[in-house]
Structures are given as structure tokens and as C-alpha cells.
Image (tube, rainbow, N blue to C red):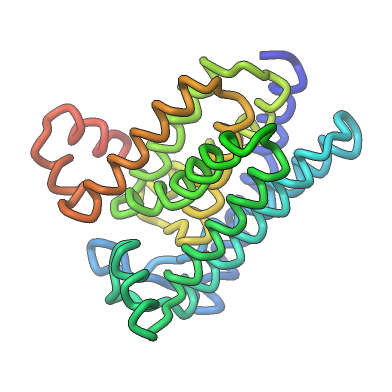
Length: 270
């Protein structure tokens, strides 16, 4: 890790430390609360913190260090997915679950915010892939990877800290196998935010909401297509497809509860 990446992590963490209590106070004052798995009312939409800090950090890098167009593409998709996630948090249908459920309701003429989120996610994924890919095969692979990663974090956002741990796991693996280190700043800046956010999430003081899971997911997706070789991409594609198929049929929570190692990791820090 070079000095700039370390500085990015530190600035990101400091900004998050300052912004987090302010945002929590605003969410409480505005009654932007959600019901967690224990039935408690706590601030929702805390994923707004990711947008405020990440946009500032990436804009800072773009303006003063690396004037590269992929930062603009990333921020556009990042903010757009955060917006549709925020809409889902505020007016989404809580009784309709799963990607399949939202798609079926759309086909039946009953559009949902979750369906809109899925549709926008695919369009944004296609747009990013068209900009970043070198041929049509890459466009196809990259589009599916970004779209599935964008939805992945939401699948795990059912217990305190779980989705953040999933993000960190994927981020560390991708950083280790990255073939283009110049893009690592996208992940390092997000990890700086999570140093502050994760303890709040683990103690069930806040929920990130779809605005958080969407921005986390699309960050992983775009970073994956920018830094992983074709073999790694195909492995991620297979893994993502499998996880989505499994999620439509069984509960990840039940799987985790029935596995001692997964249950230990899931409860770690709570």
C-alpha cells in the first residue's frame, strides 16, 4: 500500500467519524427509522454516509491526483444506485421479497420500487460495461457481474454487520488478486468509511438501508471488472449466480445459523 492509499483511508475515516453522529441525529429528528430484526426502531438509510464521504474522497482524488474518466463513471453509477436505493428505503414495499418476486410483480402489472431498482441496476451496469469493456464478450460478462454484485449485499443485509463483513471479505480478496493497482483507491476509501460505520452496525445502532447496500454492491462490481482477470471474473460470475439462485430458495440466515464457523463469524463483534 503506497502513502496515498494510506492517506485516503485516514481522511475517509476522519470524515466518517465527523459525519456519522450528525447524520444519525438528522435521521432521528426526521423520523427516518426502520425496524430491525429485533423489532427495534433505529435510524435507517445510514448508507447515505457512504455517498457523502465516498463522493468527496473520489472527487478529491480526481481533481488533485488522477484525472481519469473511470472515476466519473464510478461516481455517476454510485450516486444513481444510491438514489434508487434511497427511494426503496422511503417508499418500498416491505412485504415483497426477493428479486424474483419483484420481477413477477412487474410482469403482472404491479411495479414495485424493488423492481425499479433491479431495472435501473441492470441499465447502469450495462452503461458502465459499455464504457469500460473492450469487446462485446466483456460487455456481457461485466454487465452481469456488476448487476449481480449490486444486488448481492442486499441479500445479506438481514443481521447487524453481516453485509459489511461480506463486503470486506470480497474487497480483501479482490485487492490481493488485483491486476490494476491504480483502481485500488476506490476500495481503500470505502474501507476508511467502514472503520467508523461497522461498529455502529454491529451494535444495531443504525441500518444502512438499500441506499447503503446498493452503493456497496456496485462498488464491488465496478472494482471487480476493473481489476480482475478473465478467469477470476468467470469465477465471480459463477459464485454470484449460485448465491442468487440459493437466495431464492433458502434463507441465508438459516444456513449461517446451522454452520458453527459461519455463525461464529456472523456474531463476531456483536
